[in-house]
Length: 539
Image (cartoon, rainbow, N blue to C red; front, top):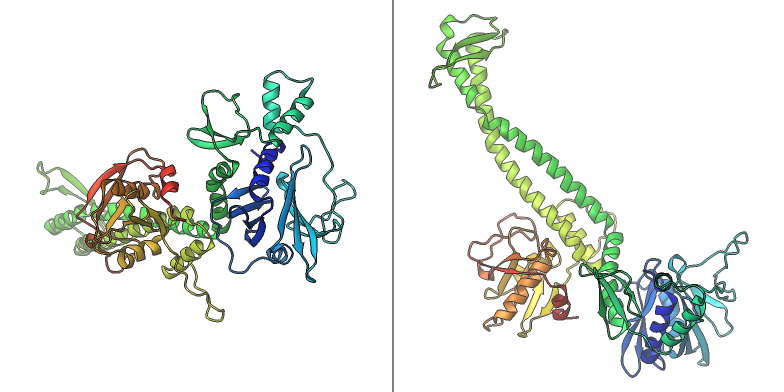
């Protein structure tokens, strides 16, 4: 659900209590439509201002976001005008999806000036606009040319900023709730009263869950969906929105930025699967070759009564227990001796083909497993650096074209594995892709550390660092849960996870990245737990 005006009022109240009076220390723009302000005050917090069409909002966030190597122009503009600015207040026009951040900044001459940052939380029309002390637009995330025919307002640098057309709008979720209760006549007064109470801080953040997955949120209990929808209470909207949007935003970000990877790997996987299917059919034919040798023997045994030009030979099969009669097709253009030689040649050819096909099928199955593992790991990428590492890996394995020598090649990327801390205080490292899995298992981990991986399904390599200590049962269980969570079995209830000391893990010569073998191991059965993963993660 989009953020409605009533929930936005609750957010505004929460933000005032945390950031009002604080100073803007640093400014980042991790995505095209997201700006993060690091605010120093009674407590140091990160204020996220999102003008995303799908999930616009303002919130305090605890999640870290990867920033681009070169800040965008709008980010540089904000740094110029708002670095060191003090947040004077945060306002919301009544029942409008809009927040106004009033700030006191210092201009180039050292004079104190007022700046306003307007966040319009209006779905596809969401925008972030910077105003000077006169109310003129300095710049905005999305420039709107306007349309005289439709009356669409212009949002361009140099123009005076005008609020959107004032309308009394009832939040969709609230409207459904009131209509459900049969309230129609005094709806407007009820909404205004609710808005006033929420603005005064009389609200409780609720997450709506269905089958354990977040589907909506509100600042009041929503009971109209029945017992299949669970209400989860939160202390703050900051934690609620982090939980609600974390997975959605990461999935969307990876889908947008990693679309080229997904397309390339999917095409390679499908091509490999088709080739493997053809080879397996050829192997079935090659395996059924014994009849060719038998035909050659029968022709040789009956050659004394055969003549050139015969189209078939009907004779008893002395290899059959009951000596059943068999009809052998012949090439009339060949002599009997040549027909026998042809069957022997086809037999030997099929025998050689079986050996070669088995080798090719083994390579094809290994290649298919590798490509499937890459597809499983793309969603684990946490930013552009991880995606770049995947591109680098695919270029090294020949699935992506390397950059030409005439162009300046990018420096090799070596991302860091995810780090967790067990309840027993032991470090747990989790690889996000095959390259990281390789480094983690063969270079970073010590021989005595414990290695975890899901049994017979794709997943990340997980290392429980021991540093000479003995592992406690809880830490081992948590490491196994992490291995299950970062695998194909994430949605399972009872996932088999193999674990063994790193010294028993071997990487075959010439194997694809992330591919290892092991024979000595034990198996644990665990249930993936997303809440535990968040709790153990080191940020």
